[in-house]
Length: 500
Ligand code: ADP
Image (cartoon, rainbow, N blue to C red):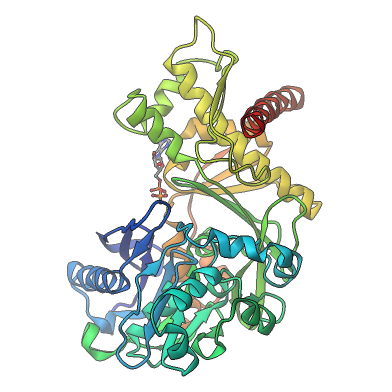
């Protein structure tokens, strides 16, 4: 019998990747291609859906070829994807009628403003806030601005999908038009309690229901790939948005389990079990996944600047050649010597929500050197995460004991130790920090019986390192107090600007 593997398609914001895993989560093959970013106007971001499709398929074929595998070796395909990005295409020809409007795109800010009076209803139904980030206003924009789009959509000629939906439709030759719950819930059109598209929201945004995909679980048989792609059919059996896939890949299957992904930005997700928890502290409520007839919910918080602050030290300040060196520099001093940096380069997100804030450095003396600044940046990343963890604890009323970490900057040991100290949590870093694609592979494998149970998956997980808190409570609270003082001063400074 042929050896069997799982293929994970990881369709990200800047590149399409394919990773093939064996049953023990070892990577057998990886292929990656970047694709074009379009910035047609200030604040606008687009992708070409056909380029997303072609790069994704090219990497899938390349990954197979590299490992000398055929479609017969692939038990199932799982997809994880950039979320919220919006595609509308012609049902007959499969041609997109406009570029994909990317999650970062702010063109629909005025649409979102118009929704503000309905924010309480939107939050209760979707767990989200009225913001151009989510798909709904992007879809409305396409219907309003592409000639004939609305009439054609109402006539049933056009289909809408987020990226997993688009890829599944293309891979099945137009047979399956579905969206998994974890992606559907990011559209701002999906009711996270009823698990249905919501008529009131559809009416509010004037979106024809007939163009929407069928909502499905994150682990289910969606269809099979058409023969032309890989020479024979492969079942497509898992899909989840990137952050939820990472939560799954980190094995945060139980209530109160939480993961933090330290990438360019930072995403924290906390599994809240089978009931949505609504935040009083500026976090989003989202569906983690649908599996075995049950839905798990999550609280989500994000920080705009995480690894990006390390890039700033490297590229703008020229402190080092590689991001990795930040650890060595920051370790060269025992403390920041009173320096605090608030890296609010693009405003402050949860729990402050201060879009006009900008970065600040406090406590600089004649003795301050690069190492102090580098250490202050690492501390800031940990403080920002702590703010989100504290918000989550306040919303659930439960203490978080363990934080599972992944993403590029999670490789920084000093940062992880500072995080453990400041948040008084045990940090658990897995050997594989590829949790996003692993999550997609697990979801796909569970559906076909490749993995028999969640335990089967948990047994796979190898821990690289645990970091434990090493400072006392007095020091911890004093340091957090200093950080809050700096954040408040930064917010006050930018609001003074506004009133001038
Ligand atoms: P993304 O998926 O958002 O592109 P990655 O998970 O690949 O991000 O992480 C890359 C980010 O992590 C970059 O911003 C980089 O500066 C930062 N980074 C990578 N290695 C380290 C390190 N050892 N210490 C601190 N930051 C790091």
